[in-house]
Length: 372
Image (cartoon, rainbow, N blue to C red):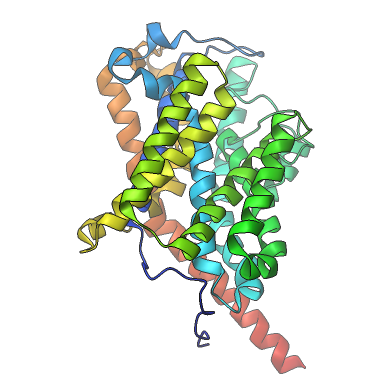
């Protein structure tokens, strides 16, 4: 089926944001460093504090990744908002295709890793009497996870493939985007900005379901940046100045005021502005080699915990110790293995599964049309 021409005035002339794609892969890898501390958590049935400074290899050189890699999740949300605005605002048929596209892209790998983690957690629990890191491995959390509803406020805590919590909250941001799409088309910047400010304001005043509110806030913040670009265009110099100003604001908020949430907000959009500045300056598309690197970020993000759990099971069984994880070579091995898994997953599982889901949906629609 041929798609109609893009709606006028709702899509930037620049089709590909290569630096932004590359940054998604870098952000996924940043999360790996934050979660590397899991290797040093013994079999306990309660929260265990890891002294990252003592046990993490290369901590002196990479302390900022080990201590702050988790804020890459907020960056993912902001980038998603920008990308969704770029893809869907000008697509006249977006609302009809939106959810099928999301299911085909997200659920196959989520379901695969969910099942694998459930099996390996059972093995770990059988050997140690408790679960590894995420302790809510029950039927209720499994059923919630099947629908990616496991971090909407009904959960006791993270469960099964724990990092997927951020994907669960993002589903609600998608729903808000889908509902607001007609209004966003009429006023891309102001509508997205209002949604972002409302969600983040509720978060900062400690309203319930803070993770969901932050996700929606960052997501629509990214969409608002896209709306501003539609109105004013993308100018590398302006973006670079904004990135520098937001970086200084993040440092001031974090160091002088010890206000981590506000510093993360400023730093996230500083990074987004910086990547957009690079993309805007790249008029000859010299960064085209990075165009598809971001495709692996979803796989890196969802595979790294199952891989970590598999390595822990192997180390506990064969060596009886995880001391090897304190070696720099093992850190590089884990990060490299996760990245390779991300690329392999995208090529040999995610894309084929996506095509299969879309093909089955198309057949279903054709069958329904014939029956009528």
